[in-house]
Structures are given as structure tokens and as C-alpha cells.
Length: 204
Image 1: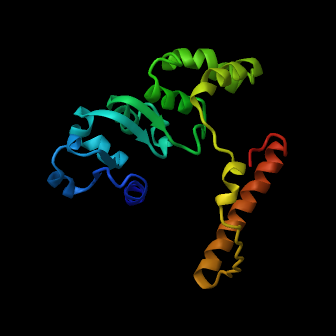
Image 2: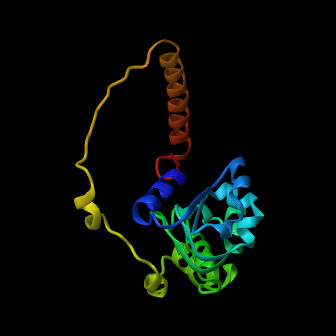
């Protein structure tokens, strides 16, 4: 990903001095502020205090779902960055629960969705536990001005046509024996559970 961003910068903004700030070689790069653009990884961000002490004009988080857990070191380090402008790029702003959305906005615009507990009471509980459509609409309207969503139809013309290759692979020898042993064991557990609790009460 770092190399890709570096190549894209070279292609679209060749006049900028770009540093790939990663690995032990970064000690020879001088200071982050010596560069027009610094490309780094989340792991490096968590370890390199120089990145956290630099005043950035713009910080862009690619694959921003990396900060979905607000308690993680990655999210905490990202929120410590000193930046005039912030942007998140992600295809999955919510994977498991609405706290992940709150975490992205906590980086983008701290306080905009309230604190974590207040967000839980106002939005998470009514939406996730009670299925409250009105609250869901309210949250959608609140974040809409700050979310630019790219639909598949927007990029369909740029995508290559879908290619499907079907490969049939048979298990043999020890692999087949192990698979069959596990299959029979799990099948027995499932049947026993169905007998004991019935279909509706069994979680399969």
C-alpha cells in the first residue's frame, strides 16, 4: 500500500517531495516536515513520536477501518495527530457496530457525535437494540454532509470485466482423513444438539 501511494503521488503530483516513512531506513530521511508528503503505515504511526509532534496541513487515513476500535493504539495515535484537515478513506465505515462509525468521526471531528457514552445512549442502543428507524434517520442526516459515498455504478466503466475461474480440487490422503474425521464429529454434535433443544432453539 505504501509503495502504491508513492507511485500515485509520482503520477499525479510529481512536483511534491514524497517520503515513504517506514522501517529502519526512515532515520535517514531527516524530519517529517522536510517533505511535502509523508506516506506511512499504522504500525509506524504508533511507534514514531516524530509523526505525532509534526503539524500537518492534511492527514488522510487510507483503510480507515484500522481505527474502528477507539481503544486501540492505532486509533489513539491517529487522534493525537496535529492536523488542520482530516480525511478518512474506507470501503467499510461500519463492519460490526456503530461504535466504529463514532471512532472515525472522533478522529475527523472530535465531539461532533458527542462522547462515546452519550453516542451509545443517543444512537447505538436505540438503533442496534431497538431497531429505531427514526433515530437511524437522524444519525444518517447528521453525518450525510461529511460522507461522500462512491457507488459501484460510479466506477463500473473503469472496472475490468469479471473473470471467473473454477478449479475443482479433491482432498487426498491425510487431508481427506482429517476432513472426514472433523465432519463426522461436527455432524454428530449438530444432531445431538437438534435432538436436545430442537431446531428453533439450536444455534448452528
